[in-house]
Image (cartoon, rainbow, N blue to C red; front, side):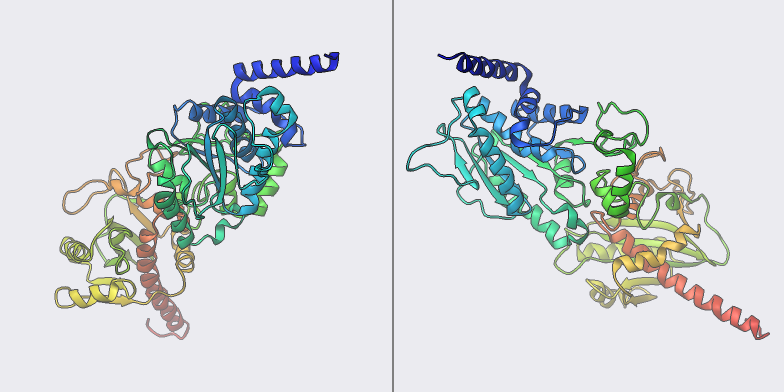
Length: 508
């Protein structure tokens, strides 16, 4: 045996032993040059990702969501290096990997196969082999080890008939570059694929493991769905946020705004990225928030102007209803709001937002009308179940007013936003608002979160407003803009008439 061969074997044995002791992190360091030409610059976030993936391997974490910015090696670790390392421990392990398009998923599969089939890998883990001979396949969408393990790659929403794996790895189920164009139908299609197709694609349901890697694009995205179902989440924003709702407890950064990978993404680079992406793109891809911190169209600071007692004179009252579409009861929410208007100011008084059937919606509107008899005008959008509500209640309630929506949801939100910005919209103080019927406070404004440095709770009015248009539900926004645009339009029209009359020397 030549000295060179002996040296190669010694190096292989040393690598194998160090990877055995150091785990995935050591494997990443040693295998990196075989899958990536750029120099590996180790940063603490790679430790965090590797640590969480190892927890999945050990079975300590069944469902893992990784939300990190682009360009931080998330795909290389989760979709290429980790599956290859798993085979060093268990060559019979089976993977289904998925992404938003076939080019991306096949590229990752090819890099993983090339690594495992390399002389470097075979010298260190000879027990992990692919079939050879006439029956051997060089395909990358599906390939198997001689031990019975395999990797099957599919586009999200693609067919996986007959395939049952141990681990699912979904890397970017929706194209983050086109996330602004993602429709509700596309979001729902991904969730249906996750719930209806992939849920049965496990070899052993008692040991199933799922890893999702993506940026936070929408409050109804797959990340949100898995987190709500109890998944472990590793969230690492580009700029540190102490108040981030999914802040990693062991994030070593202590300064607000401190960068995640300053060597690779210094401040000036991050600034250019944020400017190029725009506020929503930067929030989603860099900060792992579906909407910018502090709000998008509606800013959180605008929603923290509170009333404690309602004005008694010169007020007009409105009930505004955003109903569901026929056949979607139980899926969408119904929003019923009570507003008090005094001149240019608008006081949100009461709110009932929840899932309701058609019958429950009718009862809730009637109950709100009884509670607030001064609310003579009842605005019902003349869409969805609105016409049926108007027809059913016309003999029971006065003041029913059909409203034809003017423009799209975002256009109506932008039209109402100046009223919030100018301080003309006031919400009930979450703790100190005094109601005529003796109630005190309105927990629904922030969902019980008293600390204003923290995000309002999901399901609260403030959360719904600041998260729009990337919120899980937009019913509160629709009811709000309906009330404000209807009333403000009337007020502005009267104000212009008064000004015109004054110019002409006439009484208004």
